[in-house]
Image 1 (cartoon, helix red, strand yellow):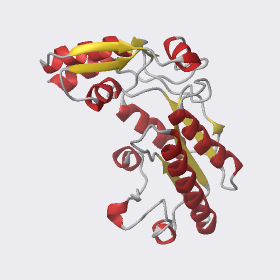
Image 2 (cartoon, helix red, strand yellow):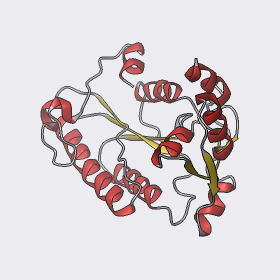
Image 3 (cartoon, helix red, strand yellow):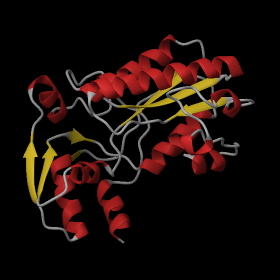
Image 4 (tube, helix red, strand yellow):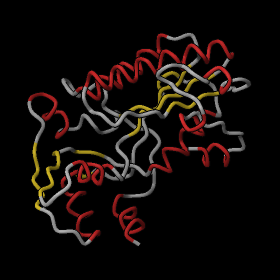
Length: 233
């Protein structure tokens, strides 16, 4: 993200615990945002448990927006997920939706950019459960290169607030199970891949078109297969 912002001709300021800033307590935020015109919020939490994720995004969002208002920040950009409002009963997505709601109800002019899953997503699913058995969820997605999302965020941040920006996706639809299988093959790894479907309405939505972009909009150019060749090389 920093590289994309710098390439767009802007000076980037990184907000992180390693730099003395804690979003959950607000410590260091006022000093970090002094003189900042635009904030790009791409924060994340590792846990997919709803309570943990909601608490994280709620606390971080409130503290960040309050500090932005105090500093006179003119544009807040949040990275979110395509389909976050179309997957019922999935805790992490509820948490991301709560993050969006905080931004929309705040006083700082805002843009929410929803992007599809990154090409790295299948690998993240595989790495969650080490060992010979690899449970992988059935999901119909349109994955995008992380660096292209960073470039799109920098582009959005360079302009005026748009509220809900057009959704950003990769060029080709994929099945996460197939992505995981191809990734294992590229890694030269042998694991027993076990596909599963999330229960209820969430599983039905994930295997349908709920995670695909809602209508036309900007698209990345790198396919998953191209990324796989690049990553394996």
